Structure formats: C-alpha cells, structure tokens
Length: 576
Image 1 (cartoon, helix red, strand yellow):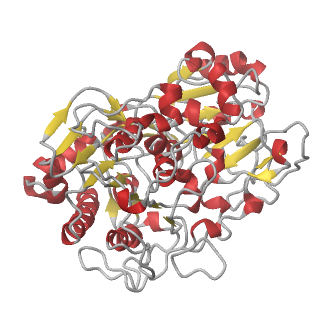
Image 2 (tube, one colour; image 1 turned 60 degrees about the vertical axis):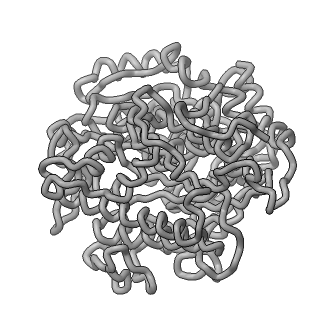
Image 3 (cartoon, helix red, strand yellow; image 1 turned 120 degrees about the vertical axis):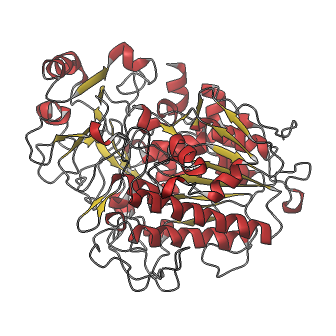
C-alpha cells in the first residue's frame, strides 16, 4: 500500500525534481563510447521470428535467411531469446514498459482502452465512442472509460490527425483534442493528456533533463505518452495516425522502390492496417523520419537540429503480416507451430529488415554507427503462432461461445458493457480485463465465469490474492488502485475474443506467443552472444540509461520495482 500511496500522491514530480541538471550539449557522453541510442519496436516480432529469418527455415524464402541486416546486427549484438513483454501485452503498456522500466501496477497503464475509477468522462464523446459525461471540480469521481488511441484525435480519419494547418503527415500532439480527453475532478476537471496519464517518468525525461536531444515516432498522437509526466521531454515527436483513411503520400517510396503515390493497394482505403502493401507505405513515412534525424534534422527534414541522443520508432508491418486476412490477397500469419512464416508475412519481415538496413547505412555514412547502441525489441508478440490453435469467440458465425464481458454485461459500468450500443466496447482481445460497477460482486462474477468456462474458452482467472501478486488491489485511494481491473481472464492459448473475418491472431494476453519477443542490442564493439535466461522488455529502459552513462535509478520504476539492467552487456561503469 505504501507504493500505491506514494504513486498517487504525485511522486512523478518529486522524482523529476531530484534528477541531475542539464549537461552542456557538447559534453554529452564525454566519457562514453555510446553517445546515442536508436530504439526500435518491431511490433509483433517474436524471438523465433528473428531466429528463423536470420538462419533460414524450410518453407520460407526457399530455406535461406531473409533478414540479412538484422542478422548482421546480431554478429555484434547480444540476443535475448527469453525476453518477455508487459502483462497485459497490449501496445500501450508494452510501449510504456520499454521506455519507463515499469509494470502496469506502477505506471498505471493497462490497455489503450481501459478504466479509471478516480477520473471522469471527457467533455465530448471520443471518435471511438467513449461517451461524454459530467465532471464537477472537487467532487467525487464517477469513473470513466479511458482511451489513448486514435479516438482522441481531432479527426482520426486524417493521417495528420486533424491538426489545424498541419501538412499531410505531420499533426503530432497538436492533433490531440483536449475535449475528448478524460478529466480529473481533483485538478479542476482538467483534461488528462497522455503523458500525464502515466504515473512514472521515462528514459526520454531522464535523457532530456540531462541535456540530451530526444525524438520518437509512433502510430498515434496519444503515444506522446512516452514523454512521461510533464510532457516536455520530447524535442521531436512524429505520429502519423495509423487508423486514418489511406491516402497517396507523395515522395515516399518503400525500400523495394514501390511509390506510395498512388496508393499501392487501392482496394483497401479504410485504414493502413487493412493492407499488406499499404502498411509498408505507412511505416516508410516514419523510416524517412529516422533517416532525417540521423542526418541531424527534424523528422520532416525541414530544419537542422542535432543528431538525437535517444530516438526511434515502431514498425507495424510485421504485426499486420501476422494478423491480417486480406480479401482478394490472402492470409498472413504462420504455416505451423515452428513459426514458418507465410509468404505475405515473410515479405513484411523483409520490408522491416531492409528499412533497418537503410538506418544502419545512414549511421555509417554519418560516422555515427560506432557511437550508437541499436536496441531492437517489440511492444508485444502475437498469437497463436500455430494456425491450428486459432479459435475465435464468438467466431465468424457467432456460434463459438461468448466473451467474459458479454457474460457479465449487467455487472459492468455502462461505458464498459457490451449492452451499450454506442460505446467503445469491452477490453477484450486474447485477454479480458473486467472492471465491475461494484467490486463486492467479484466473487459472484468469478463463479459465473467458472460455470461458463467452456463458452468463454477459459484458461486462467486472476482476482483477489492471485491478482494482487502482480497488481495493486482494485479500488479507490487510499485503499486501492483506481485503474486495476477486478478480474483478468486469460483464455486458452489460441482463443481470441472476436467475430472479425479479417484477422487470425491478436495480442494483449499472457500466453508465450503474446509475450515472448525479439530483443537484440547491437554495437560494433559488442561480441555476439545469446542469453537464454528470462528477461523483461522493462529492463530496456535502465539499460539504455546505463549505456549513456546515466544512473538507472533516475527512473522511478527502478526505485519502486527494482528493475535491473539487462545482463551480459559491456556497458560504462560510471553513472552520472
């Protein structure tokens, strides 16, 4: 309880105030051979995906390796084959674990779409249906659905998020609509921006405060959350909206030379993630931003800045290659439990590999490869790898069973309930997070789930003491955590709560396929090594600070959770 009270009392501001002051720009990393970190998330990329593409596997690419650039980085890199993501393994907590070093219990982030008992609804209904509601300053909160994805954009149909006066791709945080943000009655009903929703500081905050230049590119304006509390630690943030309508992007060409104007796949214009071809154009927009930043410019190349101390991006192409069933094109995913990729998934991995190769070449051309630590991991995995285990509920015909939220609809808040015809829906993918209207009904809710275990594909239920092992007790302060679900249901491996005919895999759950991801740290000074012991993506954050000669204990997660630096790395000994 001490930890919970400490967090909810505002330790973010206290810890940030205790960090060291700004260093002179030209003194950055003076005693370090590592002066820069390029952080890349290949969303969905498993450890076995890296193994197969670097060594080759029968049934893909004629049995020959198909990621030569990633393989080359492994020749001077440490490969952690038992790396695991946050649990839940959703993109939002997965990303924030990487940059904060925290687990959901401490950072307070559970899912893109979750719930908070201590906050109130937005002033305006979000683009995805989180309903507007009242908020009275200083009064008791009513609780609200929380949403940090495209629904808080001014206009989620636009690649620039609808930011006034923005260029085609370039909205950034200016495209966040404050009227669509949840509100805090304790703070005069002020909107809760993404960076302040996170309870712990991040590596971007620590590096920026120490005088470093920071940049990040991601799939939603909402993921400016990486800045951490205060929101002023990103010198350059770029976030073309991935769930916008697909449009031609002049001047963008994929590594294979495919022009993105006109749109490569005009049959799929509803979202970039609906097409194996179009997603490569979307990711290339961000790859070009990284190349500009390596050249010492801002993300769109319009101004000279500094080569960043800490920068990076996420790739979405592999995740789409795993999940998507595209009408008239085919199915991505895998052919077997060994992780043999389909031809379409192979092409997405090759695209990402070529894109990373361009980054490495740019680092070489600018004389910065030796001084740069390249960190490649993933926010989440994807499951099931074995296509024979895929079991959608309720399924394409709606006859495979029901979801936990549907079963307990009458016990859920209106914003969470499947009975709400205009709401955003329950937090269910291949996991189900359940916040009850009244926590005293938890035992009865669990009994209902147990009695209908076959219908919901039940694997494991976490509640009460089994939930408290890894999360704070649900409730309101000072006795509980307003963001902790009352119940977490992890279904049998392969079960996905969906009726969609366009996807065959998902993430968010606790299974091995969801959580085991690629993790490679590379620098020309490293010897090639494989580490087989269990590690966490949360360990990336303190490791990056250590590599830059900064003290990992400047991260609140390190102080509160004891998150350790990754093992078997030759890193600087002195921290400042």
